[in-house]
Image 1 (cartoon, one colour):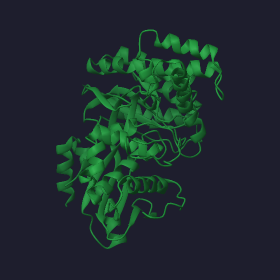
Image 2 (cartoon, one colour; image 1 turned 90 degrees about the horizontal axis):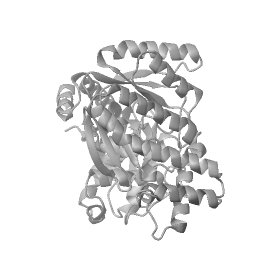
Image 3 (cartoon, one colour; image 1 turned 120 degrees about the vertical axis):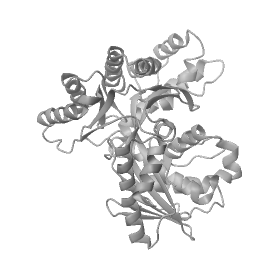
Length: 445
């Protein structure tokens, strides 16, 4: 398939012409390395985007809401079947190769290969007898561990290739439990975090207690729009077209927020606090709730009842103040999501700024997952003229989005990152890009 043909397919899917050409070039990069390693041409191709968590910090695994956008950067994934029981994954950009034996459950994988191995092993366990043997090549222009969901994009990309390879959509268990893209997003979130999904048993996962927000954005967001989703279950709550004269500018802090590595314990603490709150609710409620969001939807007095329970019931590993702050952050952030969607729909700059400032404050005070670099990036964005800015992702590093007039995006981005590097000269790997919301994962055929 020629680069022009791939670019045309991607434009038809919603990519702007320049982004379509860029994606086609990355697909070609993956295909060239694929052929070099395997001696064959790939049969299938996908573009799998990263995402911006516009609002919805640490809300998905608690049954809250998020406002999301896919970005026109991400993974190029190419694949073809092989006849044995191995999945060979080739990192076309860096030359690394992982050969994962479907039947070998004992080998310990590290880094990106662990994410691929988790997908392979979970699909083999959940869909017995499926033929998963495949060669896959990946190439990505997402900054690693920068909050743009590079890890979940990898999970989705490998999963899409293996679902196609094995014809899993025809499998009886698939038809029973995965009816559409929102179910698939929820399931792949469970693949990553290790939880059971309906009748599809859980496994070890990658070691983090996240949700399915990232997978939902990657599989379901729409070009030119911000998408509002609720979780547990995953469900669409509507979209808002982003004004053509607005543009996201994303700056990475240069601090890796590797939620399955160096920051895992701190990342998981926010999730474990939610589990503690839900356990507390279910201890006293007449009927158990499936999520914190569901518990707080039980009636007008639900939040007050939860706070009363926090005040009178000790929870090991968390102080009452910890749980109060986590509850306040979750309630406030979930409430901001529909308001932010309305601000995008009406192109209300002042409303967006107020909501973004409150969201950032909630992260700093309620999640305690911000670092001096991300706090500074938000402040510098406003100094340079942004009308909204907020850190996003796992926290403890990562990136910040800023909203600016489209015609000023390039000058803004250059000035923003220059001032940041002056303040933090040791963060010389910080980078930026501007983008309008792109489409979800696309098969290029």
